[in-house]
Amino acid sequence: MSWTTLNSFKGRQLVIATMHHKEQVMAPILEKGLGVICTTPKDFDTDIFGTFSGEITRVSDALTVARQKCLAAIVATDCDLAVASEGSFGPHPSAYFATADDELVVLIDRLHNLEIIGRAVSFKTNFAGKVVECEKDLLDFASQVDFPTHGLILRSSQESTEGMVKGILSEKVLLESFHAIQSNYHSVFVETDMRALYNPTRMEIISMATKQLVQNVQSLCPECQTPGFTITDVKTGLPCSWCGSATSSVLSHIYSCKKCCYTQEDWYPKHKKTEDPGFCNYCNP
Image 1 (cartoon, rainbow, N blue to C red):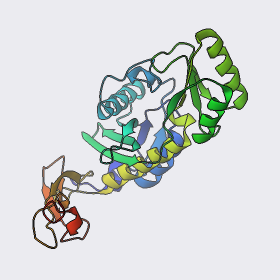
Image 2 (tube, one colour):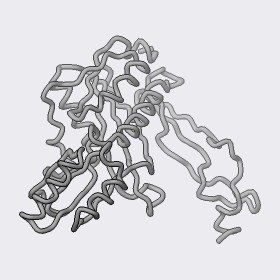
Image 3 (tube, helix red, strand yellow):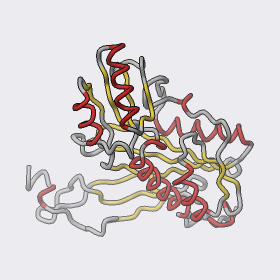
């Protein structure tokens, strides 16, 4: 089968598996980059796969959940092309001291039996939460996390969903909800609402991951022209410029095709053939 990106996707209907308005940032990128026609399924409930606020625990990893969303949307719409995203918040993969937003965007093409992934990891997130005991603490927290352009959630405690109020976007509702929960439960926990429609910063990272997905789709296998010729492995060992010892810096990227299994090694992907001695365990132990 001979492929080109345009004739593989152009004019096809693509369903975006979301209930939180992610199509607002994803659809323009996908339609421009792939030539598809984006739709969203009606009455589609992605909360069944897990919620950030804890009512339903996400039992699988982010990639598995994104796949499940795609497949559920394909069944619901009888469409053979779907995209879904799933985010995770916590320590950055390499800088553990900092909080990060890790967004995965998955495309599943049932017609050609393809799965292609885009990813964006960013320090740019307002993800936070704390116990508040008075209006001043509450409003101070709100100002630190870009309220009211970004939504908030209030509940009785971090571990409980009792008294929960989500999607708060006004100071009036925020204060009324705070006093109601405090009077009923005595303690109040405030946190950022990380659902995409209440979090423009997260939407921005989802947009970045979608752009990466489009780039990966447009990367064609040199042998069979199948989309999704992407990095599947990384080799470390870039030599130190002083002593020549192998460092933990990237030496090469391995690209592979999901269809014909062709692989290609891209040496010195950052155009560096040696590493600074500061990153060498021998020169700078």
